[in-house]
Image (cartoon, rainbow, N blue to C red; front, side, top):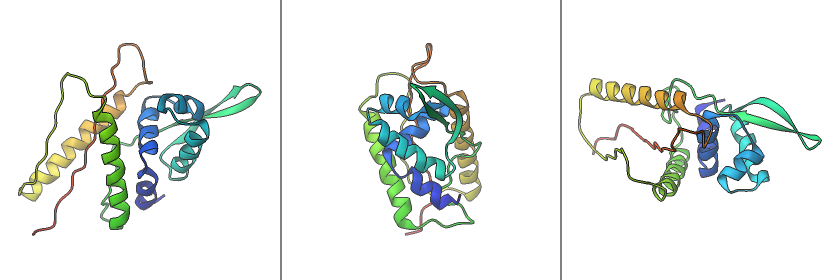
Length: 173
């Protein structure tokens, strides 16, 4: 799948949440639906969209009341999602839909925030290109560490956390 297909597949708050849920554990549509407070049919539909885009895969099929249920898992890569891959410039409209989905999800998560270690920043700066490449690399490494440590929701000894990040170079005014 192309970066455009991946971007379009993630440009929906439910699909962003499914990717987060299935980073730490494989889940069926019914299991994810309970966590998200949506119908099983809705979760199943969104899983299929993510699967077609190559963002989740079926890792097991379980027997459920005489039928079968697929369990999906998001196999997060070592690289965060690149919305501006140099080999495939993504259309502005699709990038804007993705950002809108991130904003909606950040609003939802912000309402769940509790006290504890946290960072928040906003900046529009002029810096050297090499420094920018280093920062993007380090932030990419941090997201990899978070994804690698993800566990099934509500695992004893874990706490839910949120990380929403969008970094990009700007056009000169």
